[in-house]
Length: 158
Length: 278
Image 1 (cartoon, one colour):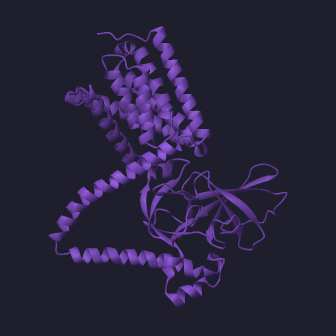
Image 2 (image 1 turned 180 degrees about the horizontal axis):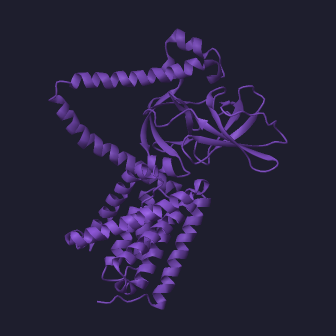
Image 3 (image 1 turned 120 degrees about the vertical axis):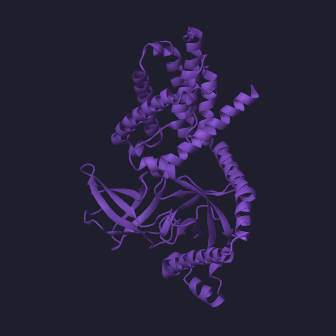
């Protein structure tokens, strides 16, 4: 139990760090890639059991702390993502990979939109939002393709 | 196996938790309630990364340097670079001596006593998030004082060899610097003729600050490329330091005009800073 929590925390820190490294380069191309959000959404999607609101909230708060954003920002969005994915978990099985990728890409762009409103209101850019949406959908599709050709990558247990 | 969809009870708990999150968000945006926790975590992060670097990467680097014949040269190069940066800072202040100090005899004291370094604090960059700097409204950096004038430097103006970059706003463990481009930052400016004054705020975009004024109070005689200087009002930034050039003029409504000024200073230019408290 403790080992699993520690593993998740280290994974979150690592993904946050990767996002931190990638973001300055991508922002020059008007792209925001919410890697932590996508990774957590994917974790909820792949999970066999429902992820409770408290776990999603605490994870969000922890990410708020380590990424130096306003408290509650990621907590709320993670809870919302957790609720949506848990609600439609069974419906996803009827969808194709492409549809699921579009769902995750669009939810990531919703995350980007809310984030821009909260922390970057003065320079809110529709161009960034639009380009990020396209990029996030393509990113999700490329991950899905990777999982088809290299199933060992995505079948790992977290 | 099928997953259970959230029951009404779980939906209520989701709703309550989201409500709590929104409340926290509102509290954090409008008050400084969580600043202590954030600053504590920031200083912990900086200290631990510093210690980790010191006892791991630095040790390995030092060891590898011992085996390299160019070790001496690289160290000398590093020292020379630091001295060069320092001399740039010195030149920056000397060239603006008349406006940098209220007491105009300061330069004589410095020249005669050869104690220039004591006239301002020298600081080194500890932490800076280029990600936030390039994307968001809050532009902050953390610095560490390496040579102090023994003054309290809170609210001191921070500069590097390119010009003024911001002011010290917090002095818990490491000094937090609010950059001129931060949306909460404000710097009093004047033009080269001295017939126009305004408070420029950070735009949230790197390199730009904005200044809005009423056409009913000030004349509309600005030209693109016009130079703007610190006016010295407010007592934080020294008077007469060049801040930037007028990039664009936007008429917001019949009485308000917005000037966008491109800063000449760049906080990413070097890791060495000067902090001056007037």
